[in-house]
Image (cartoon, rainbow, N blue to C red; front, side):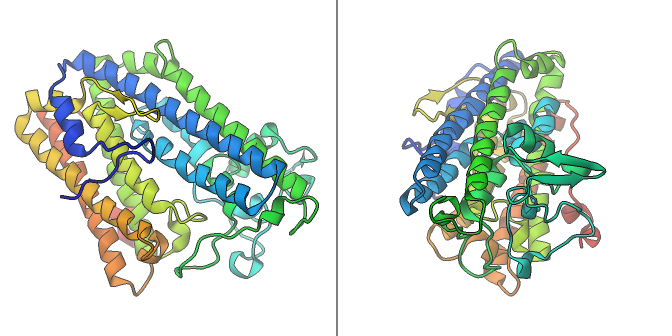
Length: 425
């Protein structure tokens, strides 16, 4: 089997086989597994914050001197930051503190007309479902949210937080990775043809400004970048020894802690990744349903979700500085308590890694991007995505088998796209 990198930089080569091998050598009592799960969380969010800080530096350089080179560097920094965050997503669902917070940093899809100008031909000029569909806060110094008029003269973190989820509409995404992605790339107007967004660098050049409001656009990008860093710092603090997430985890007891770990892995694998992020877009053949739709980076985001699940399950993490964090993971505990189920889950996780790696390889080779793979009349690309979905569903069943063998109980998040496709429109 061809093995794929489980991190984006620093020369890391941690395969599923090596993660599991290291995990098997650790002494895995239930208490030790739960404690180390918290240690891995703190390390993962710390690396995500570090990468976001480097993204912030690249954004500052772009704003100070908008050139093709500084725009290219900012886009590269955004792509480099994504895997470090994506690998944390196995901490969602089981940990309410994470799930309640997650929307601030990774909400999607978004109605980008809330933020900036859009192409009217493809985006339209209004939406019956969202009064703020074309609010364009960058161009307007006041906007109405329901019966309230919001002063948008100054674009800062406080304003962005008011806009996030405004009007109780999830499509009003004003903060996080995808707001920044839109501001760096602009809309992807290529449909299922080749090409990502292509925002001109002059959108930030106040001396040669295109599309107006270059100073306000820069202010929005800066505020979104600063807010992303502070939001990630908040989650790092939550996972420190005396942090809220650690206390909440400890309060569940050992069985509750183990169930939390497996709930996060099962729900990300099934309802979120296989369902909402992959099967839904495949059913609709809609490029707007790809996770990183402006940058065409979806293949990496999906792949590193799986990489994170492997690290969380195995208890072994390759850090951004090149070091390795090792400790007792669920893999070792499952092998000791339920060897047959653990062995099967190892194989299922390896298969999911392989199938998502095939999508990533296809996109990285330049053959076609993820939005092209889910396009209509593309049986080869569709089959590649469906194979990964099937592998993730099988992986979830393997997780559930380990849960049963350990005499635990979990509830896995579902998705209409998998459970009742007739409801998908």
